[in-house]
Length: 109
Image 1 (cartoon, rainbow, N blue to C red):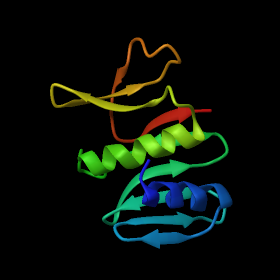
Image 2: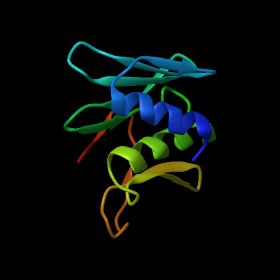
Image 3: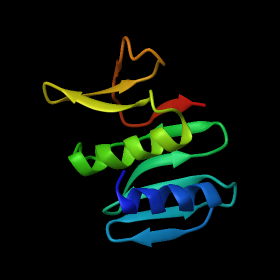
């Protein structure tokens, strides 16, 4: 995990606003963490789970940030991967039957 992603996850966990480079975390009044990359929302993290967005850019950096969030707040078994230029999400512990990624997909703890 990249240093910026470790700092991002720390800000989310401690529920504090933070930014560095192209990544920003904003905490709302209801304690939901919104994560932005280049000004585009890529994730929402609350006590129920995580919602993932691509922010209109299915880039390597977006995928890396999303995977760092999944690893920290869900499980190492959850995450976004790419096959034949199409994004998928692992949503099961045994990594079988990944689902196609769509912006706004909700993953619960």
